[in-house]
Amino acid sequence: MKAPVPPIPPVPDDPAGRDLLARFYRALGDPTRLALLAFCAGGERTGNECVAHAGLSQGRVSTHLGCLVDCGLLEVRRAGRYAHYQVTDPRVVELVRLGTSLVADHAAGVAACARVAPAP
Image (cartoon, rainbow, N blue to C red; front, top):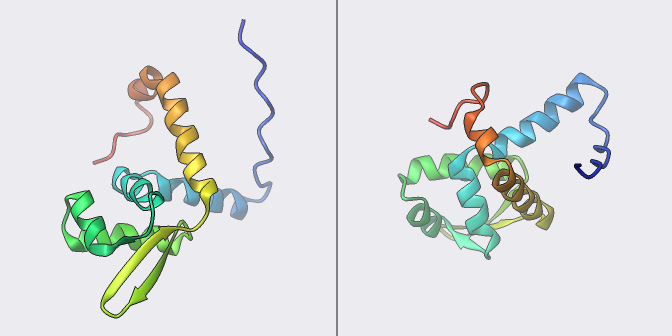
């Protein structure tokens, strides 16, 4: 017998609030952005370090970092020509940890889900 599932905190009643919540999850819904977020959770990272870590072009990494900054998940500090990135809120790291744990427990179902396409 499964343990009872605790109630989910309220999802916004209004369509705009639900859209905003869904946009937050879409910001986390890219493998490169997840990798960059995890990398920056280890401490402040330069843009060059992020490019080397991601193994992608500077332009692509910059686009992903820009998304994370625009969404408020990373903050950027400029020092001359250099940009330094770090996680803005430790709760984001905990959310990713929780997601990782849930996927570990439900990997077969997530992998088999035909309604959510794998990342391109």
